[in-house]
Amino acid sequence: MAVSLISPYIAADETKLKDAADLFAETGHRISVTTLERLCRRHGVPMVKHGRANYASWSRLLQLHRDWVNSRIGG
Image 1 (cartoon, helix red, strand yellow):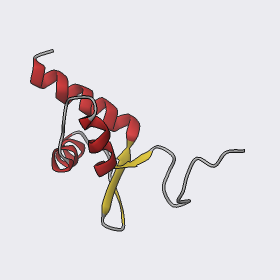
Image 2 (cartoon, one colour; image 1 turned 90 degrees about the horizontal axis):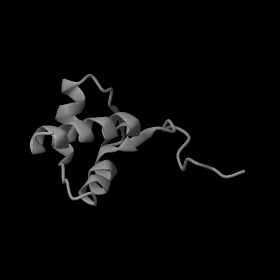
Image 3 (cartoon, helix red, strand yellow; image 1 turned 135 degrees about the horizontal axis):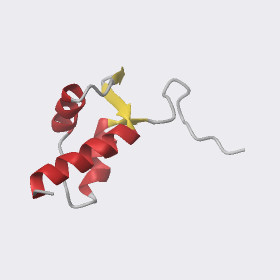
Image 4 (cartoon, helix red, strand yellow; image 1 turned 45 degrees about the vertical axis):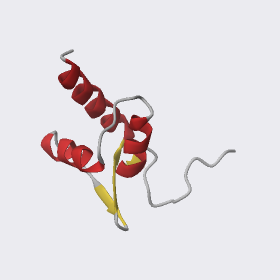
């Protein structure tokens, strides 16, 4: 059986906002961590702090990024 989590204190769908921003940069649509935090607050996406880093649902971050990109390119 494969282990999917390194830390047992982080839910399976939670992703560090910094890691999400790094992955989004690879799409060609860079977004800063502070912009992700602002979008999470604006759209009611819960963030959890583990140490100094904020984590949020990867599924919701994908949706926020999609909507943010579409609003910037007029789609």
